[in-house]
Amino acid sequence: MRFASIAHSRGDRGGLAALYRKSMSLVFVAGAAIALPVWLIGSQLGLGGERAPEFRAELPLLVFAIAPVALLVIQAEFFKAVGLTATGTASQAVVPPLLLLTGCIVLWLLSAGTVHAVFLAYVIVAIASVTIAMVTWHWRLPGIWREHGSFDIGRLLRTGMPLLLVNSMTLMLGWTDVLVLGIWRDAAEVGIYGIAMRVALLTAFVLSAINVVVAPQFAALYAERDTAALRRLAQQSAFWTLVAAAPAILVLMLVPDLILQIFGPQFADGAWTLRILALGQLVNVATGSVGVLLVMTGHEKLMRNIVAASAALNLLGALALVPRYGAIGAATSTACSLAFMKLVSWLMVRKKLHIDVLDYAALRKRVA
Image 1 (tube, rainbow, N blue to C red):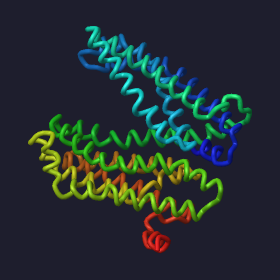
Image 2: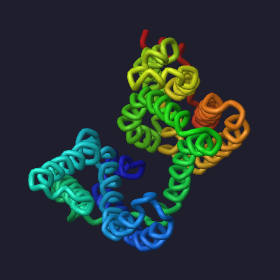
Image 3: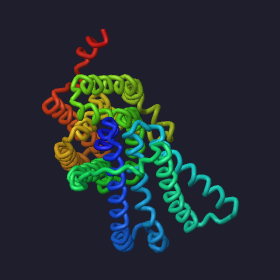
Image 4: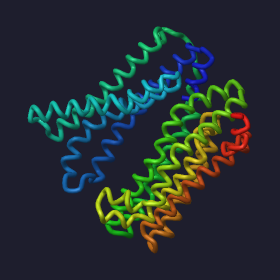
């Protein structure tokens, strides 16, 4: 997204076309290359419990979806990078579910809704979705496929590898609490914690939506060395993210038991868990898009280190707190590690870019 948004802002269609071809080719080759190891390793893990043999039988079919799903993610980022945010979001989050739902309805009407048929439908939908997205790309940017240009694939790999680690450790950060809690506590407590965590994460959707819009703008403004506009955008996005998410977070902190009772009376036991997780999300949304800002301005290795430290902190915190405090300990560890990641990112943005996204006083002066 960073390189594509810079090329688009400069009107470099040749560079954009070269980046697109190399990115899509690289992702396709990588997706195809890991399909066999995933198949071999997955077939030995015994996933699926009592239905493990059935899962192993379908795994060879499912690995065919790896490459098209990965291509669809990259294609969506290209749409967002050139200002087609709605198209990118629809291609990734709207079209595939609608096609899969349609396919499942057809299978149900034909009384052919077997597990194999549903998995086959998923693979077909993945291939169809990326095909539709790629056709739409060439339709929205006429003649882009004929443009000649160049882009250093080594530069793409040097930038992408730290981000691969960032994504991997972010996944680890999100699952550590649940896994550690599952070791020491019963399934009921893990279930209550899982619901509380998902409810708290709903407040971060505002930040996710803002990130989609501002990420390519961050890259373009930084490439143009327009520091004033970059600072203004970062501060405004952080402020409005907080304004939009604060009411929901406040509700979660004041009446968490009422919210959790929607899922059943037994879930009210997770009230304090939800309060703690909501407090972590308050820090998350208040600091805005600082992580995205670091990545879009070429500080992906720094972001990798911050996320790695946060993941380690979450693991150590969970191991220390969960055996004694259960879900409360898991929530505390998760909230603290998230707050640590965002606050350190905020400090690094101040140090590296000289931008304080929390300087609301300066924001008010510009508005005045």
